[in-house]
Length: 290
Image (cartoon, rainbow, N blue to C red; front, side):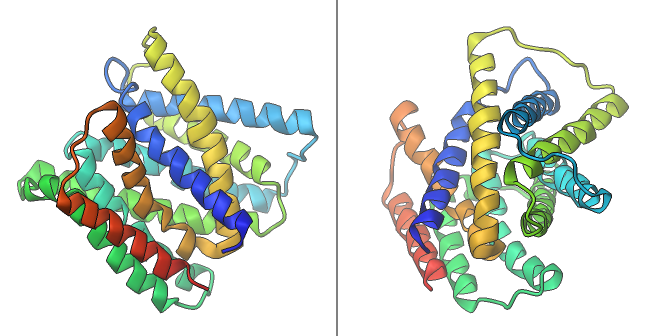
């Protein structure tokens, strides 16, 4: 990768890795679905304001809006909703392992929908990286049961991962049209917010707000950094290096979260976790080679 791609990759991994601890401040009084709606709505308002201020065109063709609606539903709506549902049944470590499957989903979907050739180095690197993720979260994996709730949570997580991968394909397509990344994400977050709002209304979910400094600050961080900046960098990365390699950020994000947890939550490293970290790094190195 060139320096620009490396910078975008690092930005995506570092920001999304830090959002894990920020999300913990969103859980509590407010229904997770409503918190996601607040996050996407705030991001959309800020993105539209930014586009207006910078003079970025927002009027697009109807055909482009069709694909933006699909991207918004997959990447900013349905994906998040199902991930939060899975978190009600499974610990975050298992979800991190399952979401790492996006590496392989991106390879398959890029072949099917974008006609991109299969990169076998990416498959090998993905298998090595995924094994590293499994080592990191081995204690949680050993507790994974086969009862109904656990399987239901796993199904939600895998479905969310697949939907996110479809969103990656749509984002790649939209990014290749020449539309500004800022405009793509402005419309995408708007459509994602609208989709989630419809779900909230249909399910009778109450719109409440936690009037605490921690909730408000974490919401602002997740909207600005976790959504606007991270998704902007990631979309650019999809265009530059393709969804197959961009998806490898999903293998390193959990490790950034663990490092942050080490600093703020006194996470204790084990030899197995260190080996997992090294394997994930090796898998990324193999996949990203020219």
